[in-house]
Image (cartoon, rainbow, N blue to C red; front, side, top):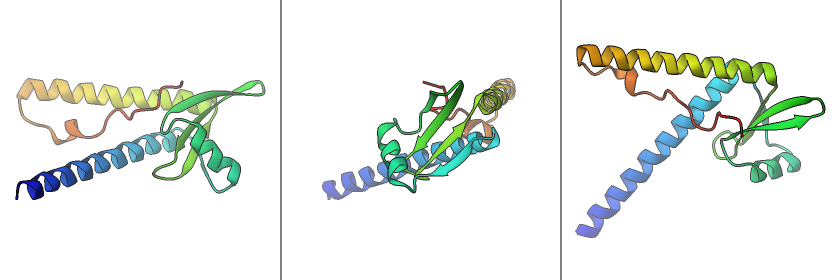
Length: 132
């Protein structure tokens, strides 16, 4: 009986972690798309290999001739890359700052009236979007 309880608890915990992971991935990808990053599917052997080489869901800056390109690889959810340049990266930083500002505004509002605000607890700072 105790084993069944522990197994059920472990299953629920893993399911919750997977749901949070999917939400974080979707949130990051939504910001990347809003900033103008292009989605490239990993549908070739070279791109599949690239997915394995990059740390998952981290934004990397790469020299591309005279330009800098930013690459975000998601091997687990969309099996794709998001690629953008300086313009898209600047837009991404503006969107992230706006999201942080809104979060801070909600925290301040929540602290002033001591009521729970449902928007406060949603995803607000996707991880992996600081260029490495």
